[in-house]
Length: 95
Image (cartoon, rainbow, N blue to C red; front, side, top):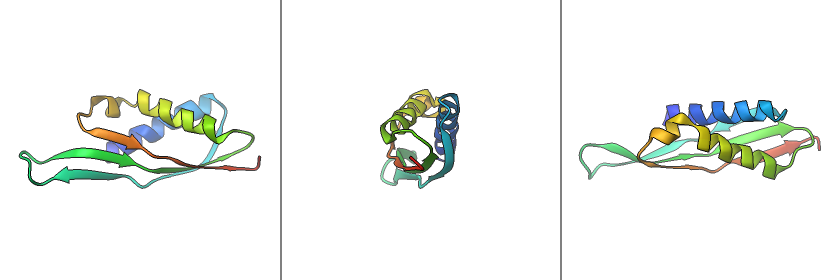
């Protein structure tokens, strides 16, 4: 789960930097679900809930799209067999 959260963070930050978006805060409340009834034990689902704060004249929709692209480009997410959801909360300051 931590590697998926880290990969999502790095993918998003790379895209935001190329888009010249000033990311001033990023904190993720990640969680994973694991069934104890199936053997072998394995993670069934990962949910990332990043709280992202950006500065400047940028729309929340644009930031949300970069989060989606970051998820699509995250090599960890692309190798997982479990479901992975990214549910961002975005704050835009100083518009």
